[in-house]
Length: 115
Image (tube, rainbow, N blue to C red; front, side):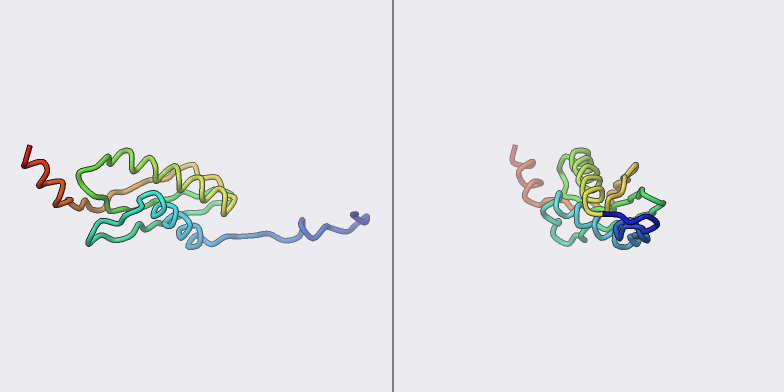
């Protein structure tokens, strides 16, 4: 029960989540979706700009080739948006996915030659 002139504990102060913390959430979310890092590839990395209650995210990924690059990028955007919203309580108006490198799947190349 609130007493006149007293501020409830939940209403005091402010919470600020550092950009690097949101970036770690975003990178982990991308890893969850991509499942497998191509052999010789690097795990997803993220940079974030936080402004008040929103975060703009850039995720760099390395993907296997051949594959559905557009589908994988859509899945990364969706997962990053959902996880940042759920864990940090921030809106995510933009998730830019940058494909840094493609890693050829040697087995897939062999299968294409056989046909």
